[in-house]
Length: 300
Image (tube, rainbow, N blue to C red):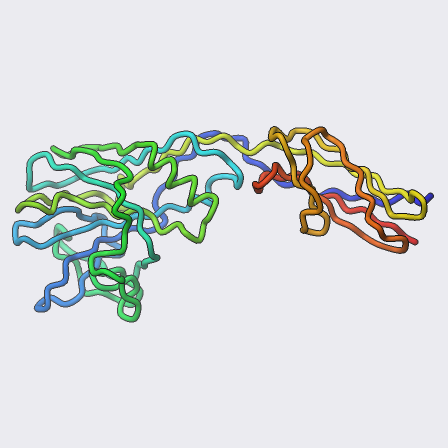
């Protein structure tokens, strides 16, 4: 019987259950007017939503680095977005959040004065027509976004406003599970009348948007392994603790070899007889909530 050499590789898990995140990017989509050309405001301290006194539409876009802020495998339980509205030309108007369906950019544009007219777009700016100026276009001018309203908030006088809803929880959970789909929200003001525009402060300002996320971190699963020969076959006994699901996936060399009851133990008869090395981990079934990795070597 040959003992196997073991080594574990721990996965760090955050213990915090609340994260407060500022945007990774934000911008304004200024309705395209031929005489003005494509406008943007990547580095400005404000973005806009609604209709101007000149009957021109403004839409905000804002995104947050969810995957870089929340441990993978976490369960999102609450989401709220706080934004400071610093200038208005209208009475109380409803402002909506909609999930964006395509990526978009920030260049180096920086509007002057009150920023309501924007600045000439620079390479990679989001504009009314472009996701990335001046080569990649929105499918629909004004931004590609879901018709589903993620949250609404009446916005009146100058001050802080908070958006929060079950749909926002679903949005953020989806972005955590699938980071490549995270393009943020479009901030849609009232476009039914003139004027309705609201000005919000950006990440470059002294009062940036704050996304507050409450979450349950993934379970900490601890795995150990012992290898031995059984009838000449390389056999590994796995033991784990900390998983909370009814079933677990057992991985050998990054491939699921079995989905089994979460009873804390499994024996893997590999079928191999000679020199070999295997790397194991245990995950809650169908998730990326996984244990440390353990390596088992058979020397002959």
